[in-house]
Amino acid sequence: MQKLTKEFFARKTQAVAPDLLGKILVHELPEGLVAGRIVETESYHQDDPAAHSYGGISPRNKSLFAAPGTAYVYLSYGLHYCVNVATHAEGIGEGVLFRALEPLRGLEIMMERRRQKGMESLCSGPAKLTQALGINKNHDGQSLFSSQLYIAEDESSGLITEKDIVFATRVGISKAVEEKLRFYIRGNRFVSRK
Image 1 (spheres, rainbow, N blue to C red):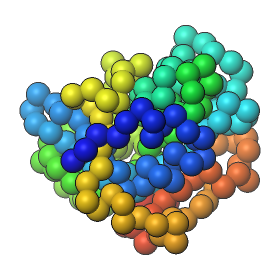
Image 2: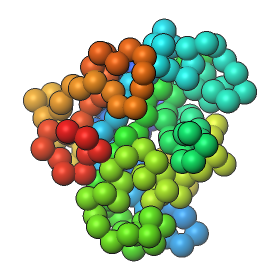
Image 3: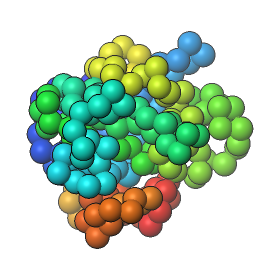
């Protein structure tokens, strides 16, 4: 596997989000490596009223304004962590939310963390995938080019073409709901919602 570079993320967010489909999110934990293929993402730009960065920079969202390739991890509804990657350019609050993964490596570790055995729902949601991969608030602001937490590609990553991607409306938001800024791999059984 080859890690993605900063240049991959230093582009328009709406281009990065679908291009992340097929790539692999990897976390090297003390108990072993866990990894999943990215099968669903959502795009958020600075002028988007549904984005955490919409009102400007704050202590909570400052990682969205960091260098492209920085992790932005937040607590959703006070219960679950979600992970995004900062995109576009430093100082511009934009990012891509990871919505679902197809589990690839460290399945026993992920199942133990999620306290379940079923593969399809193991990482089929933003909170599920962070729990399965052991991503939490401590990862907020970390570079996704580190030796522990990173995004990579393999020989299968480039097989996703535009005809394989569904452009859909985002999930769980109350503003800008009509925008088709959610992207997922057509027919993939691991996505959170069809």
